[in-house]
View 1 (cartoon, rainbow, N blue to C red):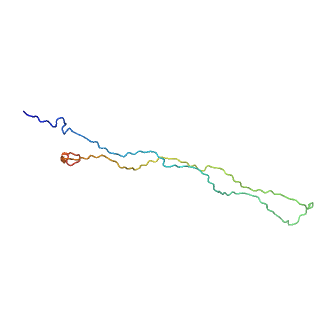
View 2 (cartoon, one colour; view 1 turned 90 degrees about the vertical axis):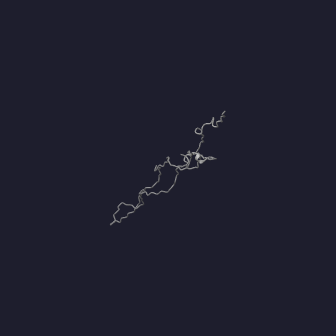
View 3 (cartoon, rainbow, N blue to C red; view 1 turned 60 degrees about the horizontal axis):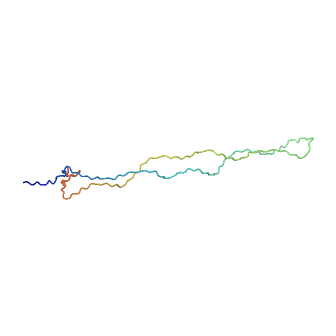
Length: 150
């Protein structure tokens, strides 16, 4: 009578069917942007006082006295010797200064967006597979990129 040997592979998948895997993760840099205030510009007008001078041509009258000696004295038959006067009105231009405001300049502020690129860097981590062999010949493990695999 023959004794059956128990099949040690019974109920187990064959080596060609057995597969286990591990996931490898890797970090990557992701940039986020947020608006932040970087400054402020104020446009203000102030009153500045300065001295200005202008030349204004003016006219004035002046009196001059003119005496003429007569070549021959002239008779004055009914003339009486008495006091008298004669007036001459003098006129002059007087300068008065007035001020008036005029718009001479207009100043405005605006803003525009300017595109730029910033270089950022950081350290990232990744998981790497490491195969440890314990009692297994190196030729029995087929690693991609290894000199033992086909």
